[in-house]
Length: 190
Ligand SMILES: NC(=O)c1ccc[n+]([C@@H]2O[C@H](COP(=O)([O-])OP(=O)(O)OC[C@H]3O[C@@H](n4cnc5c(N)ncnc54)[C@H](OP(=O)(O)O)[C@@H]3O)[C@@H](O)[C@H]2O)c1
Image 1 (tube, rainbow, N blue to C red):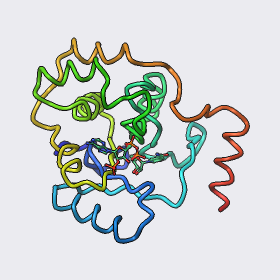
Image 2 (cartoon, rainbow, N blue to C red; image 1 turned 45 degrees about the vertical axis):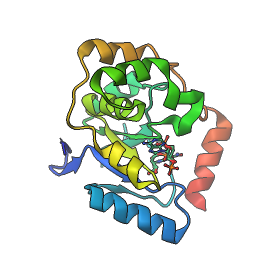
Image 3 (cartoon, helix red, strand yellow; image 1 turned 180 degrees about the vertical axis):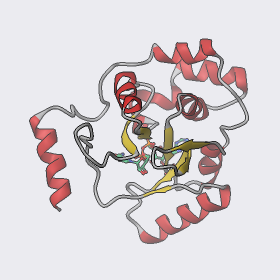
């Protein structure tokens, strides 16, 4: 496991297990126990999810969790976070399967070279950018697959190739639209 050093001096594993949408107590318990057995030590959980506006805060967060995936690569946002020494963390690294990501040709061709799957290429690409990744699965084989990303390294060329998949926009919603802001504010209040 690789670790990321945070601005408060603590360190955090670069690969974590997500619990979003694991609303069934027993399924959630089993998945988290499977993840711990596989080796995960970072478990992501939250009362609600919202966008952080950290630039003017006195106590800046040490981590900022935003959407990072092959179709929404967020290099500009990453740059700003690093400027403020806030570590980026990726939610929905698989874009919840949107755009047929699990069968993407570019990712699949790259994976063949390393004998790795599309999801392992996606995760490795984020980890090589120094981004903390969160994956959730209720399937133990997938949990293992998502953790098995520390025994290969993508070449510079392949890292660049993946950049061509960027659409420059969210796969889910426009973070700047008033209705999104309203929805996020309501999440906070509930
Ligand atoms: N989605 C959000 O809105 C959101 C917001 C904030 C934070 N987060 C955090 O980010 C974590 C990850 O996000 P996410 O799970 O919502 O989206 P995701 O990473 O895009 O994953 C989507 C789905 O892919 C499946 N999957 C996982 N590993 C796989 C594999 N190796 N091969 C094929 N399919 C695989 C999982 O379903 P199965 O269980 O069926 O395998 C999962 O539900 C969350 O659990 C949460 O901690 C998410």
